[in-house]
Image (tube, rainbow, N blue to C red):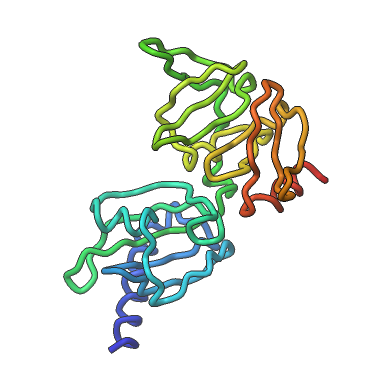
Length: 223
């Protein structure tokens, strides 16, 4: 039965791949999920290491598509599956059950990459203020709300930290699941008593670097 399910899932994936051939880039990964698991995965150039039978994680594209029954397009950070990726999920049916077909690309794929933001509009009290992107020192996710900071002042935004990286200039760097910083706004990098990395911004804000992002931070900042 497992083999038969896999064959049917593969046929479904091929059917939709043929329908979407005009935009699916060569080398894209394809996955199908239904119920609580992935039932099919064909790795492309950007392999996110899914396996048939793997449990669907809460908040993933597959989870959202199956629950919401609508197209979902998102950048998923590395903490969900270990590797960051960009995906578009489509609601489909598999053997009469709600399912999700997911097309997976690297976040920096030319098809995905959009023109970077030149400004972002933030909210302070009852006012909305457009701010040039290079003036922003960092973005923060806190208490299920999202903010950016300019000269120590806080502005609320509707964008999430998962949505931002694909539209930010390359001088912004993710250092933590809750922080994205402007490299030009860094004052210095230090270690605390536990040897954890901390980044001190020019406005005096001290931000931790999480273990998940240490290697990327060191690579980008070359230290």
